Amino acid sequence: MAASTQKRRHVVPVSKPSSRLRDVAKGRADGYRLGWEHGHWYGKCESVLIPALSQQPAQMRPIHVLFVATGKGFPYSPLDEAISSTLRGLVTQLTITDSKQPVAEIAIRIRPDIVIVLDGLMFDVAQISAIRSHGIRTAIWFTDDPYYTDMTSSIALHYDDVFTLELNCVDFYRNLGCNRVHYLPLGTYPAEFRPRNPERKLRHDVCFIGSAYWNRVGFFDQVTPYLATKDTHISGIWWERLRDFNLLKNKIELGRWMGPQETAGMYNGAKIVINMHRSHDDETFNNNSAGIMAVSPNPRTFEIASCGTLQLTDVRDDLVSFYTPGVDIVTYSSPQEMIEKIEYYLNHEDERREIAIRGMERTLRQHTYANRLDMMLNLLYPG
Image 1 (tube, rainbow, N blue to C red):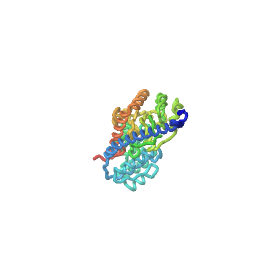
Image 2 (image 1 turned 60 degrees about the vertical axis):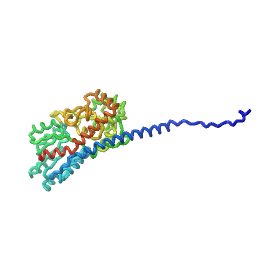
Image 3 (image 1 turned 90 degrees about the horizontal axis):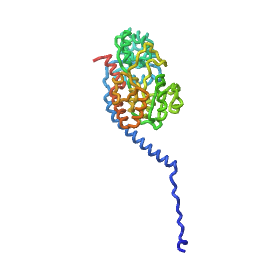
Image 4 (image 1 turned 90 degrees about the vertical axis):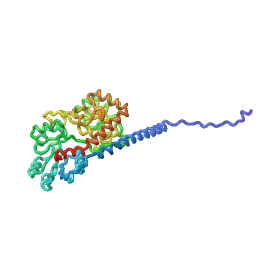
């Protein structure tokens, strides 16, 4: 029969792609999409960052400053560097030393117009008395008020001018008898804290960096079950204090102090960065027997904002002097409100990014160390 004489056709079965190949293809597509999205966002941030930084104070004052850094090492060394580097662009002559050096001898020899001491908790006030006895002006900038006012109260009177980052400490020092006291919060250093293109491993939905003071532990105990369901990253010391630590332990990097670039990388990689201030009466490393309430924002407020990420912060009374909640920063006042706002902004991408970029732009225009030190010098040398 004709049909029997026909050659049978050999059909080669077409194999379906393996699950591994499908995963590779999906991973490549997702990576391309994520890279494109973040690259676009990074470019948008740069378009805002460059004009904002171009408005930084640039007046060079014809004065000689002797700057006394803390000399404490990490984590104060980045602050020492931020202040000293910024001062170089604001005064015609800058001499840098630290609290461990014979500062009085140096000052008497070089005769600066002013000696500016940062922190000063480890600096012998006898050296300041010797400097002032030679007619050299002095100023101190306290960086941890009100948490160490038991110590700063015995230091402040030795200086001509006192600067404090805490608004409620202005009257405290004036009542001690200090004649010239100024409110000057810390700020951000854009050379470190600015928009970046972070590695994939640094990208998370929610991030918190800081020590587990007891007020933070009590608060996080109430949001732990929720954060455990999210792509959360927490870094700092003492987080084993959490009641349900095991729920979050795989999302916590314990006992690590990160430098500015690493911290900025984490901020850049997160969709939302939580900020929570420490309590004025926390028993951990606290010397505030006067019970001075803290109302001013912490330095992280400005550092987070300058990275171009959405900041979700607890409320401090004087926060509104620096940001407008709902416009360039987002606030919460309870665990439930924190959860609701995290959920909301994770699901409203455009709104989240618009608030973040407004916060970054305002910070880089108004809240850098160039802004702060320009204000300091204006107060020291008006007109």
